[in-house]
Length: 98
Image 1 (cartoon, rainbow, N blue to C red):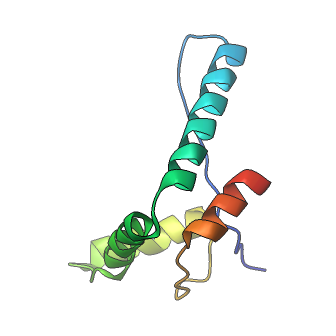
Image 2 (image 1 turned 90 degrees about the vertical axis):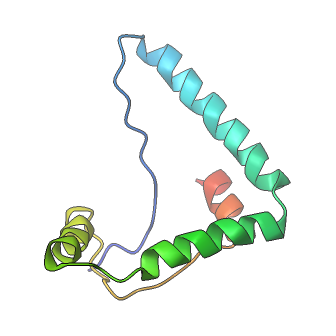
């Protein structure tokens, strides 16, 4: 079965305490949620267009292509040809729902 759920991971290294770092992460996520909710459809569309452009960029050599596929494999995302792009409404929902 292929992993088809896209998520995010926050990886930090610090000498601060875990409760402090968790609080800072939560503060960032809350602020980011407000930024997304306040973003116009046009501005969000510009970000999506940039992502689409990057995803559709042709590879320049075999090393770059194999690196992309190994990244998919390492993340257990085996649907190599899948092209799904976010909309602001489903992105905000998914970021606040889980």
